[in-house]
Each structure stands twice: as structure tokens, then as C-alpha cells.
Image 1 (cartoon, helix red, strand yellow):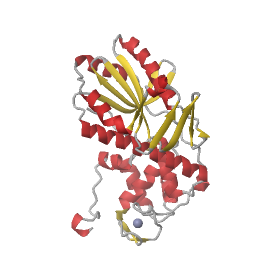
Image 2 (image 1 turned 30 degrees about the vertical axis):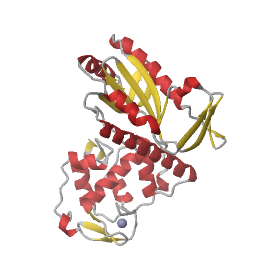
Image 3 (image 1 turned 90 degrees about the vertical axis):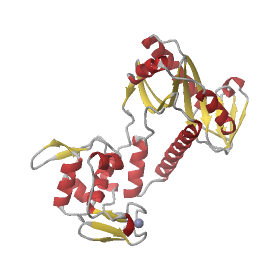
Amino acid sequence: MFITDRRKSKELLFYEALEVRCSLTGQEVKRLRALRRGFEGERAYDALWEAAGHDHLLIFRDIWLQVGNAVLQADVLIIDDGQVTVNEIKNYSGLYRLENAVWSVNGYRISEDPVAQVRRTVGKLTHIRSKGGHSFQIDGKVIFINPDFNLTSDSETDDRHIINRTILKPYMADIAAGYASREASDVAETIKSCIIDDPMRVPELDPSRIKPGIRCARCSAVDLSIKRYAVECRQCGHHETTERLVVRAIVDHSNLFPDASMDKKQIRWMLADQVGLRCIEHALTKYCIAIKRGKHAAYTVETHYLEELLAIKQYKSRYEKKPSQI
Ligand SMILES: [Zn+2]
């Protein structure tokens, strides 16, 4: 069973919010594309586990661990009795070469060394093993999820750590034959005790780059018909209540400036003064945590995921269209 959710990273949330509210530089476009491709690869990998069945296993997805002084991220840790398997997922496509320990694609050297990454995680897990007094085996593999990935390698040692798409299903079936009983649960508890929040810092953003305004939640168009309690996109017809629109601006602000608090003026500015202050105040009070009250009230959010925030705070609006009206 999956113990942890697979979620977008802070950095991916940052670039996705930036894409909607700024013009991206060439470098930012590249970074966003790479992050999206990585996330899609991880989702494709999870879908294969759903098909293979994972009820008898304990699977951590997308976790950050503090092991001694080291901090590391693991895409996947699979635990069954006697073994922890590390899977590092790569959504590479194209013709890759691994020669003299250097990775390249189409003749260009790449800075990543996926096998070294997985080896590092395996190494750190040996510390967790001794810390918890466990005796499990550790195996690490890089999973190349994309069917269009081709590798020519001169390293038999590294090849042993690589699983490509053609052998992924039998590889998973083999692991799925394992069983997680009490012994595996104890290992999972030790690993859980090392989990930390995503420590990555997003790039510092100059607020003047933000283009204030209301954009369609579906297609990002600015051509909207603004009514009192809802907006409707003239490009794609998408309907969004004003309350949801404000919460979306709040969440975008929290993803663009994750270390800063926010106030009603900032949200109003992000929405280009097109939503009344009372509506913004209502949303901040209902959906956020007040860290400063009074005239200069400041807020923060408990989650950076829009749908999760709406669910936690039980979003429900009578101005939401009924399914029959869509
Ligand atoms: Zn639209």
C-alpha cells in the first residue's frame, strides 16, 4: 500500500503559479518543462504499481529524509520483510550514452548521474538500518519509465542498477511477490521518524514581474465576464465562483512567495482590484491562518495545494454551477 501521497514539489508549484501570472524567461520555461516531465514520469510509475497490485507492500513515495547531517529525497522506497528497495524514477527520452562514468544525450554531457543518486540513497539507508537496529537488505534501481529511452552503456556495474520500461512490469511483479508483516512495519516506522518537510527553496521572485489580473482557471485567458459572485471565460466558457477565484489567488501568492505572509492588499493587487475587499477579507479569514490580527492582519496557509485547501475548509458555494448547467 502507498503510505505517502505523490505531490507536486514546492518548485513545481512555484513555476506553475509563475507561468499563469508572469512571462517566463527561457530558463524558467525549460525548468518548468523538466519538472512537469519528471512529475508525469512519477505518476506513470505509480499507475503501473496500481496495475501490479501493492497491498502486501509498504511504499513511501516522494519523501525527504534527514539522516545524520545529510538530507535526501527519495522518489520511492518499497518495504517488505527483509528488504528495502529504492527506486529513482527518470522520465528521460532519447538516445543516451554512459561512457567512462559520464552521461550524455545526443552528444551533450548531462550533469545528473542517476545511478550515483540511487547509490547515495542506498548508502544513507544503511545508516537508518543501523539506527533502528534492523537487518534488511537494500537494493537500488533507477527506473527509466519512458518507452522512448535508449541507453548505450560501457558499465556493467551501473547496468545492474538500471530498469528500463520493457522489463519494468516483471520487475514490479517480482517485488509484489514479497510480503510486509510486523518486521517491515517496524522498518517503515524508523523511516517515518526520519521524514522531514520539503526543504527546497524556490527562487526569489521580484514582485514587479507579476502581472495583476483575473485569469481563467482552465485556460488562463484574461477575457472574462465578471459578475458579482462568479466569472465566466469568454474563451473556453469556464465558470468559477469569486470565492474560489480569490482562494486561487491566495494559494498562488503562497506558492510564489512561500516564506512571506500575505495581507488583503496584496491579494487585491494580485486580482487587479477587480474583487471587492470584503470578499477578499472573507476568504482570508475562512481559508487562512491569521498570524497577525487587527488593522494590519497578515495570513498564511496550512497547505499550498488549492484543492486540498478548499476541501479542508469545506468550500461550498451556491454560485457554483450544478452539473446539469455545465
Ligand atoms: Zn478559459
